[in-house]
Image (cartoon, rainbow, N blue to C red):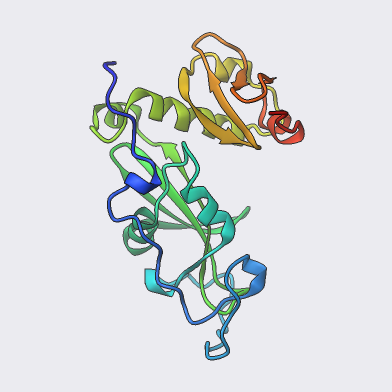
Length: 212
């Protein structure tokens, strides 16, 4: 496929900004300290979360992901997912909003029963339709290879996956476990451009510190 311009980073994403801060939310969410004027809620895990983006705070974890190469999540996308995305309950991490745009599925995980206001916990991307994504001007081939590789590493965290790494070709480094990794088509491992380490699983990437 002909190469397109690299996908935008967070600072280049149109409409990038922070969501309005809600009245308060718990320190446990890893966010700003609460004010005392926030109303208490009696929500239970079975109650669907609200679709009003301005009510949501952001965990530090989510904020960090906004600035990481190869994540492709942004506040405008999270806002749109909350407003119009498909809502599903997942037994692992609770409520998820999912939005498909240009062949890519954006997943936004939220929580709102253990904090004093709803919180965006995390977010990620998946390839929902490779053909549609390839045809979209928004993505180049490296973007799609990066998303698919990150999905495979996370989906098989404790396993070595050389057969899933070999089809991927990623020449723009992206961060996993403190390493900045790339890979060539046919290689059965990813390589850190900082420490030259080679890894076949996400578990290895997170256990072995990058020795820059």
